[in-house]
Figure (cartoon, rainbow, N blue to C red):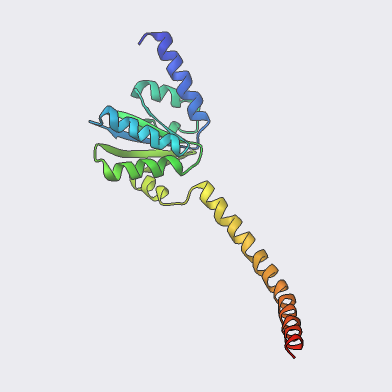
Length: 172
């Protein structure tokens, strides 16, 4: 890799880091190409990304971003998982690491905050942003549905009583 390729790689990684909310640093020692491809597919499905990085280039790309505090995590064979959703990348990485011991979570950066491996696993248990929105909409719409049901009930009862009297008069 010559200097221009390195500069382009650093610039691309820097842009990616500026657009994300969460960066999870992992050690991926011994993962096969098929396993990495599988992980990348899961990441894409969750709206996240996974990239094998060179430590020196990653440290340079971190400068000027909110993730400068995680530069000491880049030792050994590292890869990063990143996402705009503060939970998506952590969920996929933690789930993949449970079933594959070749991937180890080192730590993460969530905005300006540095998380250890346990913090990433705790973050992975939280619901995603889309799940939280769905829960909020459900909470808001449930009372409205109940109110509509209560308001319709007396009218329905009156209609059933009138229908019963009409059926009674026809039978007589």
